[in-house]
Length: 223
Image 1 (cartoon, rainbow, N blue to C red):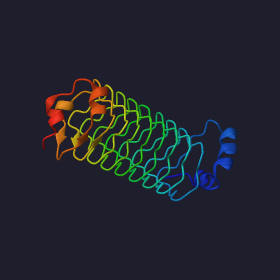
Image 2: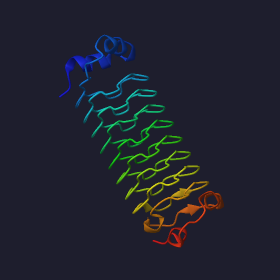
Image 3: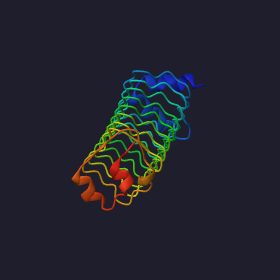
Image 4: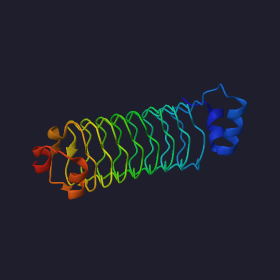
């Protein structure tokens, strides 16, 4: 369970927490299973904090520093994580339904089995992120950087991948249907011939031009 003193610090906001962390640089914040719903935590420094199974639904974490934070099983539905730095964070089975992650830094982040339905990931940096089994139905990935990302068996139905860069990503077993590929870079993406097409998707000439060779099975997009 969370340390009550640490929870009280968080509730007082970024400025108070910053002063405390400067005075106690060697103490790890213990916020496990804490109720932090709806809090205004923009630009707060939660780097390295233990937040496993905490409730941060609808919290404002815009621009927050969450580097190397333990976020396994955290509830972040509707949270604002735009421009947040999540590099090195452990986010297995996190719930990010309808969360805003615009321009967030998620480089090499572990998001195995994450629930990202209707999440806004516009221009997010997801290079080499681990997204196996992630649920990305209705997610907005417009302009997202997904080079080298591991997306094995992820569900991308109705996802918007316009302008996204998936160069050298791993798409083995990915589920597609009504997925938007517009000016999407799929060059050297792995596993395109193993994607499961539950319904037709849209794919434009810009995607073909950027991607080079695409296997027939993928282009036909047959269920």
